[in-house]
Length: 64
Image 1: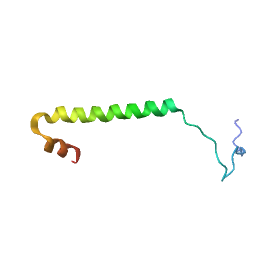
Image 2: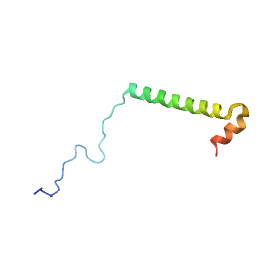
Image 3: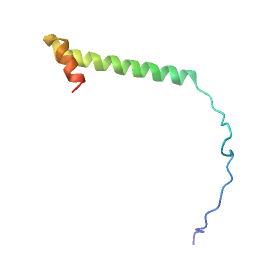
Image 4: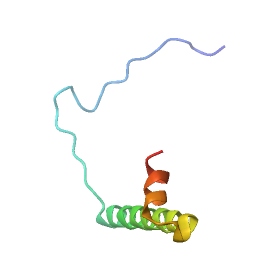
């Protein structure tokens, strides 16, 4: 039968301690470019959908 008692595991950090971290510049840059490509693609698809109807239809599709 499994032991169902809960053991308390000591924390490596106490409340209020500064937890070290680092940022990977490559991951941040890749995330930025993926987000930028997504935004450009969204605008491109909105423009293709509205066609020659003008900016009023494009504006209406965003704020509906």
